[in-house]
Amino acid sequence: MLHLRGISSVVLEKRSRDYVERRVRAGVLEQGTVDTLVAAGVGERMLREGLPHHGIELRYGGQGHRIAFDKLVPGRAITVYGQQEVVKDLIAARLAAGGDVRFEVEDVAVHALEPEPYLTFGGERLDCDVIAGCDGFHGVSRPSIPEGVLSVFEREYPFAWLGILARVAPSSDELIYARNERGFALHSMRSPSVSRFYLQVPADAELGEWPDERIWAELKARLETVPGFELTTGEITERGITPMRAFVAEPMQYGRLYLAGDAAHIVPPTGAKGLNLAVADVRVLTEALDAYFTGGSDELLQGYSQACLKRVWRAQHFSWWMTTLLHTFEEDDPYARRLQLSYLDYVTSSEAAATTLAENYVGLP
Ligand code: DHB
Image 1: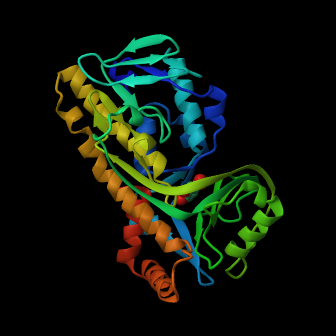
Image 2: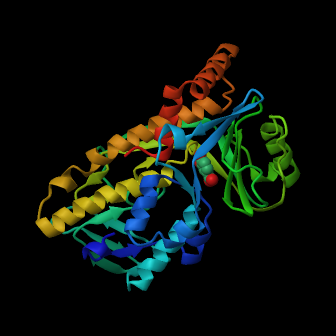
Image 3: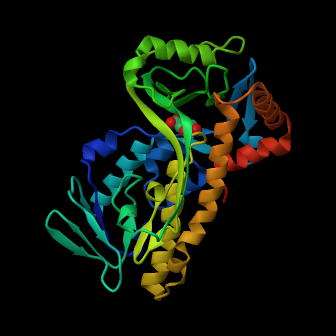
C-alpha cells in the first residue's frame, strides 16, 4: 500500500521467511479486508483459492441455526483464506516489486522521538520518517514506549483453544460454532480437502494431553449433536494451543511510532477479528501517511489512534460477546447457563439480533 503511493519502506522481520509463511493462524477475511487486498494488488490468489461464505451455523441444544449473511446483510460476505497464505502473497508481491524485506533481523530497538526517529538492529542504524510497529503482541515496539504513556485494558479468559488442521474434506459447507456443555467447538476449513477445528480446553492444557484419538472423540462429542451430522476424521497435520485474552493499549502512537495490529490490541479468537483489525489499522495508517508525505498534513497522523480505536473497541465487544455466548464458564451457575441459552435463542430467532451478529461478523464499514 505504501509502495503504490510512492512511499519507500524497509520491513524488519525477526523470523525467517519460511517460519512466517508456515505459521498457521486464523483464516476468516472480512469483506473490507478482501477489498483492501484486492485494491493493493495482492488479491489475485485469494480471489481464486479463497472460499466465499454467506452464512455460519450456530449449533446448540440439539439443533443447528443458520445466520444468513445473504439475507441479513445483503452483498456482504466473508472469505475463508488462511492468514499465512495472505502473508505469502504479501511477501511475494513486495519482493517482486524490489522491496526491502529483511528476515531474521536480530536485536531491533525502536527510537521513536522526533526530530530523528530511527531503528537499530544487528549493529546497523536506520533513520526513518515514521516507524510502523506491526510486530505483534510480543514485539519490541510497544515496550519501547516509556512507562506512563500507555493505558492498558485487559482480560484473561479461564480457557484456551486447541486448534488443529486436518487433511480431510470439511464435514459441513459452512462454519459451525457449537455451544456444548463439554465446551465450545468450532468447525472451520481451509480448502475442499483441508479442515480446521478448535476445541475449548482448560487454560493450562498441554498438547501432550491431547492425542489424536482424544481430539477427534471430543470434536465428535461436541459437534455430532444434530440428527444426521457425522464428522469425518483424517490425518492431523498441525496443532497448537492459543490462550484466550483481550488487550488494548491506548493511544496506539508515540512520537513517530504508530502501533498496528496485535502490537496494540488482542481479541479472543471467537469471531476471527484479529487479522481483520490489523488490516483496518494499516488502511488508516496508509491514508494518514499519504496525506503527510504528499500534502504535508499531520492531521490524520495525529488522529490515527483515535480513528483506529473506535473499530478496535467495537471488535473487542463483539469478540467478548461471541466468546461469552458460546463457551462454557466453570464459574457459571445454572442461572447463568439459562441466560446464555436464552440469548442464543434470541440471536437465532430474532432478525434484529441475528443482524447484530451478522453485521459485526462480516465487518462494519
Ligand atoms: C477460524 C478462526 C476463528 O477464530 C473463527 O472465529 C472462525 C474461523 C479459522 O481459523 O478458520
